[in-house]
Image (cartoon, rainbow, N blue to C red; front, side, top):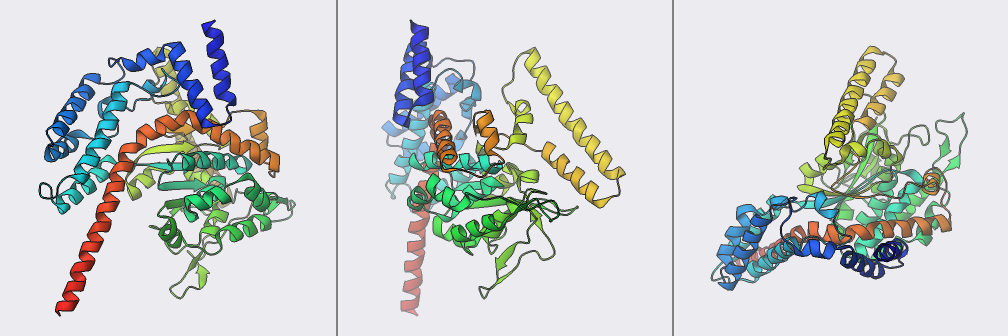
Amino acid sequence: MANKRLSELENVMKTAECYADYKDAAHAHDELSGASEWKAKDACKDYDYREIRKRVQRIKQAKLSNDATGLMYILHEGLHGNLGNIAASSLNCHAKIGTKHLIEEFIKQVCESLDFIYQADENEIDFYEKLSFFDETAHAFGSSCLMLSGGAGLGFFHGGVIRCLVEHDLLPDVISGASAGAIIAALVGTSTNDELKHILTPDVIYAKFREWRLWNGFSKNSLFDSTNLENALIELFDVTTFEEAYKKTGRHVTITVSPAELHQHSRLLNAKTSPNAIISQAVRASCAIPIVFSAVQLKAKDQAGDIVPYIPNRRFADGSIMADLPFKRLARLYGVNHSIVSQTNPISTLFRARDKRDTSGFLGLSLRHAAKLAKINSIYAFDMLESAINNRATKLGIHKIRSIIDQQYVGDINILPDPTLANFLHIGSNPSKQSLDELFKHGERTTWPQIDLIERNTIISTTLRKYLKLLKEREALILGRHHELKVVNS
């Protein structure tokens, strides 16, 4: 009877129409399966429960003593995202929702401590001491990014993922997009949350992209005519630059593009690296799948606001070829150390298995090692082949294939569409209203199992940045008043 009921609950979770129904079924499943008992017990070989228990006790004691300075010392001492291995993926295999109560209590106590420190009497901890604490701790702790992969028509799956994250207020401020993911990333980067609720819908996407590809013929530079795609991007983004988008939304949106020439590296276009570049052209370039769509010359605004070529004499193509998920460079630019990935790139299925981080057992470890060796040997073979060939076009093709192999296709939290024939057929087809409804709903449903995990992994960094922002706003007011006083006194 228990197995039958568990199967029924799993079916409810799979077919739920809203997250509340999914969540209720997940909790009921954990109660029946025994996962709730597992969550209630501190002890577990997958994390250092003794260290976490001591931390919780120390934090509680400092709060009872009204010791804000002591709390700052405790948090400075060792606060990071995987303290005691609490972020280990193996801890997420025991329950349908939630994790060890001790871990949840630790996260709660940390967030309450940050509230306590922010509210502390400034006769005890002055303003600039608070500002320094939150600035240093936020930088040291890091933050999360969201990366949206390529995937052609299947990439509209990202729309459902974004809608779900916005609904639960879990959308990171650092977002990257490649190829089809660039379209959704640009929508996020140029729209407020309220605007996204109206723009990011199957109806709007269908109206803009129902004929994103039109057959061009074999005699042209590309197999498909990109006119409709370009018009849709211009309608959505006009001539907005990356800097203008950031000033509007406060989101760090990055679009990845790949060079159409040899001896050039992929580029990350954003408000830091290319503030004056025009987003619509960047997205068009990132969507330029070789042979399918022609490469693109980027555009930018000059100081007078006129549209001019950006990086003249260079053309760019599909961003997913060389930088589907550019985590390392995002980490360098924005200090992120945790990634959420919405992965629809069909190529990624060939490489996901080797990236599983908690492979165990003799067979599993051996297969993982063999996969790594196969990757290294493949890259070596393509390097040798490229050096032995003189034809420029052939060298470029080999270089692109090598780049596809030498990539990471997963992150810390991965949201993946079901590997079905129907989803595979979405890749090369123009979307229909029905297919977009299905993709958006599938994106939302696939995100639901990750909601609790995403919240646990991001709430501390979100709290740190919330208070850092408030303190910096206060600092700006203080400096503004000082400036006004100087002007009056002079």
